[in-house]
Image (cartoon, rainbow, N blue to C red; front, top):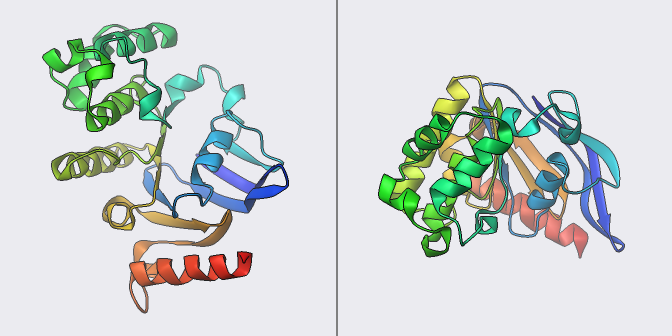
Length: 237
């Protein structure tokens, strides 16, 4: 479904990504794990056509995102919940999205209900939303087209414990229905709870990939993550 093949990105002589390769299969959740500044957001921007790689390729369904016919219906994305228009209501944001994608208005109410936003909350302007509510609205927007692949950048930010538990259940149900889910986060515990596969990145380099059980051998997943990121920091120094 999703493939990164030897993706590198250099900004003004600084390498943000260095030969990153991994795949996300249909019916699975892949946790893209790394500290802030590791290169996760850069990779997702390249995947969704917002940035060009210096070398390598990132594809969805075997093609670059921009070459897909109506990509918004096949790939749901949430890269920045704060980018939602603050002067529009949540329902207006979703209605405009549905119109652009050629979807029936019924998807607006279905998506609001799916993410747990009430009718009253849907009528409020986004500028008055908490960060957690913006995250829910952003996920609702990503799910409008019933996508086959879902790309989320730090979706747990701003969610309370109940919201995080809800998100885990939602992502698991989407994967179980055949969706390929790529979940970027710096929160190891949250990724560990839902991911089928984990891809660890640090200083723009792929550090490890595998199942939670495979990466947790020895000192546990957290210990593995800390050791690998520390090693990446030392090699970059």
